[in-house]
Length: 429
Image (cartoon, rainbow, N blue to C red):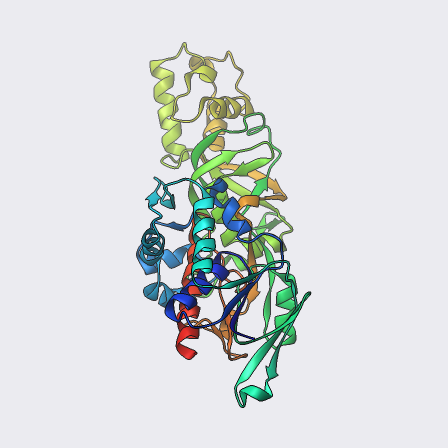
């Protein structure tokens, strides 16, 4: 018999257990983890450095990074947010640093620092950790000895446990979602989020590892030249924000980088319906439009007529990408500015400012794998993160239909939900 059982030995589960124990050290707490290892996602996050949060301290701005959960997280982020996360770790001797893109990491540059902190804290508070304890059933259960108080029964592959409160911090666990459906919760069907785009196109082939700044837009589907996608519009703003600008990475299989991952998160459900076959439009020079670029080309044509276009690199674009777009524009490597036709320059200007590519599938961004889907947010009280359907049952992390773009935001959701659930549980007991 425990006061609290937390199902899931990941970031949200540990954080919740530690805060419950800190608020009420007398409570008997257990963490049940299905695997042999705990905190596995923490270990690989941020390339093994653990991207603990993001340097966005305004809740109203912070929620904009959550394609699902934006409205629901505004209140919780006013209670517990980025600054509180930093304080939690620094109170335990872990200094947090901010990188140029806003991502925040432990100064040690090692996720093991965070893992050691969590393991040390549960040992300090006497929290029971039960590994290889996959949960196969959860049910409300009346314990006669406890009188009228309803307790929960948790059946693992090893034993049956009882607890006054349950926290589900199981991430994208299909098994737990199925159990919740049996208990009366609605589960929003999960689809992948945070993935890269597979593109086979001569304009970007053969230059993997090249990174540049670009603006990318996901385009509506077309049949016979007419747009057919009504889901690009919503009632409030009229159009979904499926344009993003920032660093793009060309890979062996297509496109990756922060901009691609943001778009994959925002359009996760739409692209799933497309079966990951769609078109994107890219402006490789976001500060330019086509007409402005053509004007610049005509100036160069007057100033440097004897130079070859291929080797000139008239704009601040990576040389290898410039060369690819020049060749794709039917401009020979030895063609001089003086001899280029208006049609060739027009085509080059089009490829630089409005290249269209066919995306044929996705590749999972394994280190930051996130799922869009989970417990329907209408069924959760976000003042406590308690189930509205099953009193005494709480949620934290990605078990809910909440997910974010890459950059530490998914962890912040885990920390915030875990903290608020912990305070509510400690108070109720």
